[in-house]
Length: 367
Image (cartoon, rainbow, N blue to C red; front, side, top):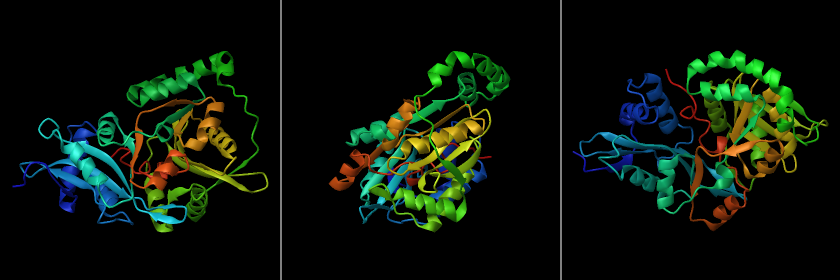
């Protein structure tokens, strides 16, 4: 029998228990975990194309020898000014019986944080896990933690937001649509911007073209993912399976003369709130790239669009009348002063595809 609250690397035999824990703690469901959830956990945390045995996901084993806690770890190799940075993304922290094992969550997090990596990242820290990070000396990063939202149709947005919690609210969409049409003159001024029209052209991207675009633009940040084509293709395939917010749309943004200005990946559907997975822009092209994303979202019929802030995008988003909120925090741990200074300066690409937002465990359903 194991001693109380042992922490060890995740093994394949643990997957059914971890799936049951995920179903109970994070999905708050008493139903048995579907087989597809266990299969996905195994694929992401054990069969990642860049799996690193020295940076494993961890489980907490209680006094009875059962899995009672889990923290998922994803390898995330990075580059900083031409130098390799070993990074790990920590997420999906959960404990089945915190009353019996009150220190299990903190021990799981401490185990990952004290690993051999140069940089530990989480971009989905909720209030509970953020409290653990703070107790260990790592505060949230406000410039990477905010969510931005740009509303196009207020009544439609309110209805869509409600429908994310209560499916029956979808029945209100015709009324919301009529309300937005009738009331548009009343709130047109509140939603209008002083931004001058941006000249650009959108080019749909997929496969090798999308990968090449992401590789090029990511390197405009001093600290950026050290992707290889195989791993990035694998991650994008996973992201494309997330259908909660609609189909995935990927575009390059070019100047009228064909110069690459940026790219964006978002999920959108008519009447829904579009969700941005990734938004990258060349220096001084941020406003144009953001404008192109907002235009595209409106063209799909979305009532609003949201995404995660990157420091360079805050000003242009403010000028586009976006508002900001925080429902999960980004936090890092590093002992490397150069890494810390680069992140503090806002010159790091450490969220979205660089972290964990692409996985189906965030914002998807399993049947």
